[in-house]
Length: 167
Image (cartoon, rainbow, N blue to C red; front, side, top):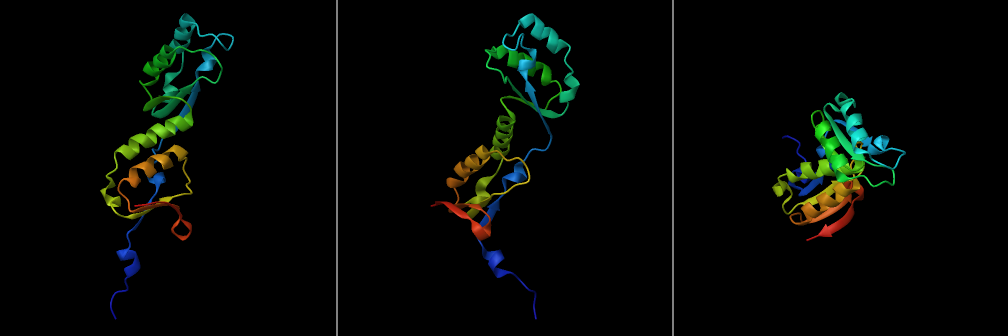
């Protein structure tokens, strides 16, 4: 009697793509620039610069920072730029937007670095449920990438996959 082999698994063209594998580990921080608005609506340059000067920038050490304004106020772009120049001395990345925008940009960078030859003419299942925060936009991004090379694309798990694309 010889070695027991799973010939189905060995010969399958089915490949699972798990976006969770490309999650960038690290602390995320959302900063609301409205905390520096006078009366909640007006950004005064002199006061803003003084507030940034006295701000605790160490709190952003090795973090991923999203900066936004939650108020319906006109905030000049230079305010976000000035914040970025200060934060980047400590943070790994600063993104204008919310935490979902931050995740989207991190996934864009991760997906750019993948060698997709592994998925050439394969039956690909994009894994659904995840334990880590994967933005919905990442599923759209990976679908676009895989559609150019995969034979089929499905979503979910092997036992209950939803067909999305067939070449």
